[in-house]
Length: 178
Image (cartoon, rainbow, N blue to C red):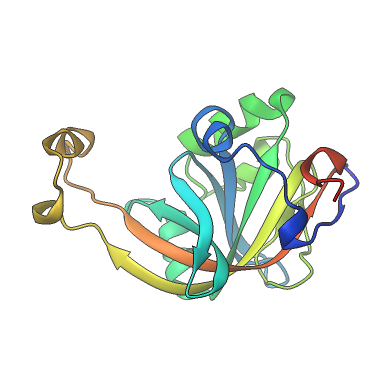
């Protein structure tokens, strides 16, 4: 298990584009205490300020089990894992959690969060705890770049979820010195 400490919003130090594109995140949703939760790998999203609040944006296809949990519960977490957990992230991204505990099968450990019901992952170097603020479905008629449609051969367009970041915890490399 990795020992993470709290990180103030203004102290978060993260190579955002690198994290999304090259390292990915584990997205967790559901309720840890109820034992109804799941995780999946996400590589598309955003971090920033929206409506004067820090936010994380994640996108999930309606075919995913995590989609059901995101719609049923008010919060989610993003967990960044070190490179040695790349196989676990690949597993989370390629298997369903509907009929099995894929978090356990991936060799990961769910743990209680500080501000939300969704679990964090004990092996994560960085965790963002988020409460949903808004969602919307992608509408292909609004794509301005025709290349985007090629990413949806099954027409299973993502739903985007904006979550207010309520808490950040991580190891020292994610905390700026100032």
